[in-house]
Image 1 (spheres, helix red, strand yellow):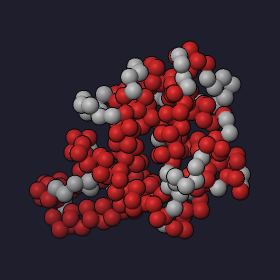
Image 2 (cartoon, one colour):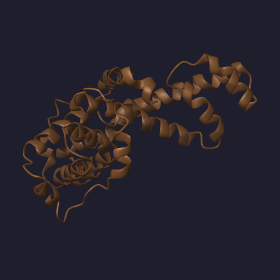
Image 3 (cartoon, helix red, strand yellow):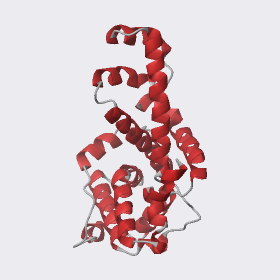
Length: 240
C-alpha cells in the first residue's frame, strides 16, 4: 500500500503547496462528498434540527471549498478526519444565525446532500447521551467500513447471491451459519469457510485502502483502523 500513498486523496491535498491547487481542491471535494454524513450527524447532535443541519453542513462545505483551505491545514496532525472536524467546529462557532448559513456559498459549488436519506440514517443513532464528537467518530468509522464493503460487493457483482449470503459472516464470526449458507449455495461447509476467509482478507485490504485515503503516512493506517474499530465496536452488532 505504501506505493499508493503518493496518489491518495488526502496526500494530494497535503502536497498542494508543492503541486497543483486545482488537483488538491478536486481531491478535497471528493473526500468531502464521501464523508459528509458524519458531519451532518455531528451538527444534529449539537442540537440543530434536520433542516438546520442540512443547511449548515452544506454551508460549511461551500465555505471550505471556496476559501484558501490550504492555510488551515496542519500537516503535523495528518488525519483528514481531524482536520475536517476542527474546521467544522471553527465554522459553527462563527455561525450566528440560520440566515447567514443559508446565504453562504452564493455562486460557489456546493455538495449535493440527500437530506431525507441522511435523516433516516441519523434516526438509527443510539438514543443515549453520546457526545457530538463520539457520534462523529462512530459515523466516520462506519462510513469507512461501508465504503470498503461497497467496493467488495462491486468486485463480487458476478455472484451477487453468494456475496449476500456470505456478507453477514465478514464482520463477525458466525460459524453456526456455515451449514445453512452451504445448503443455500450448494457448497460444502469447508468451501463456505474458505470463501469467507478470502472475502475477509480482501475486505481488510480494502478497509486499509479506504483509511489510507484519509491519513498522511502509511505508518498511520494501522493506528487509525484500530481507533475507528474501537469507537464503533460497542454498537457494531446493532448496526451491521
